[in-house]
Image (cartoon, rainbow, N blue to C red; front, side, top):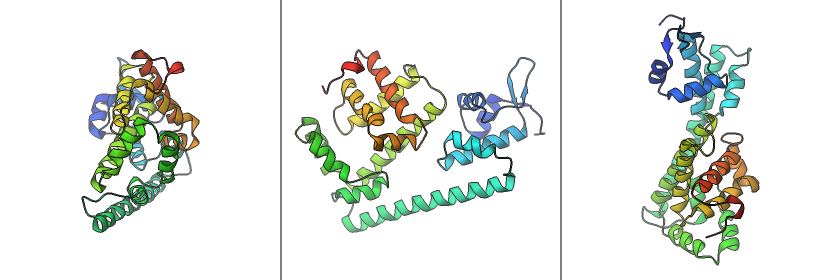
Length: 264
């Protein structure tokens, strides 16, 4: 492929393994802009354009938000070699972090066996540094007398190491989907946003029976509790507010007024 615009957005999407919608979004925010247009005004990408997209994908794989990727790629002092060295450094750090998690899980499996129950501290080893075992005590103090807490606590007390690994994987997948939609500019109340809100409600429902009204109250914590807000906004600035917004919009679509939501 010569370094001149010639590939359509569909061809590039298939080549690099992302959706056409993602490429359109990256074009709109100035992250990866095609350098040409066809006579019919379709986007056309050159070899250099595709190379930039591949660079974006590597940075995104390290967990870097799109806004930061744009800043890094916009730094004129960084040449191609410097970008590659920085990408390698970030990937090595991520591999090291994942290896630590694997080691922690392996140790738990050796010590407790596949079918043993785990303590709060051991669960934190699997769930990672964002999890604080003290939160469980705080939750029990707030909701300990409710049926919802008793239902959730019964399930948690019977979970094994394998169960917690599956739970961690599921929430990672969900949060990746949420962050991707947010960064693509998906608006609350749209079909895709409502589908994601239902996925979120389904995940919460694995722990405790969750109505749309309960989900609204839970989502308020994402902007009212700095710990929850930081958890989401560290993945993508503004994500916490957006998740709350899509939950509230979906609740309205299902006949629940978020302003009068109750724990029912």
